[in-house]
Length: 153
Image (tube, rainbow, N blue to C red):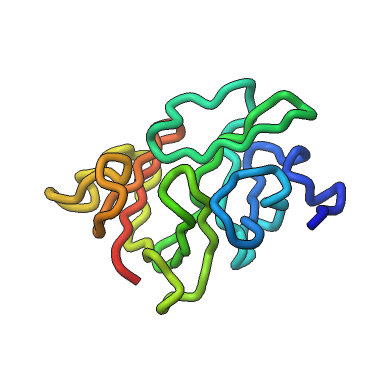
């Protein structure tokens, strides 16, 4: 599916939001397009556009562009109560915002901006990158500091 030029993720700026298109865990540029951050489909937010994303092991999804030779560093665009369907595994597979119910993989139970600390989600709640198949879990981004708590839908 081709995106209109204004929806092409290579045109995204810091603060832009993206929708993940279709099924499949790949993170190709063609799998995303720019949407308004308040739309229900806005699953990701661009937090950095650079030659290289830092700290990619802590939850960031990285999308590379051959045309611009840059990377988009993405966090989930989530608020408390949002549900996501996770493709393959986190953070390498895409996530799509979905209605909470049987099609959801997890639900965001808490959002803590300005803090990068898994313990915010509970004393025994692991960071997602250490135990990718367990719920509840914490999704911790270090730059900018953000912690999302996730549990069963």
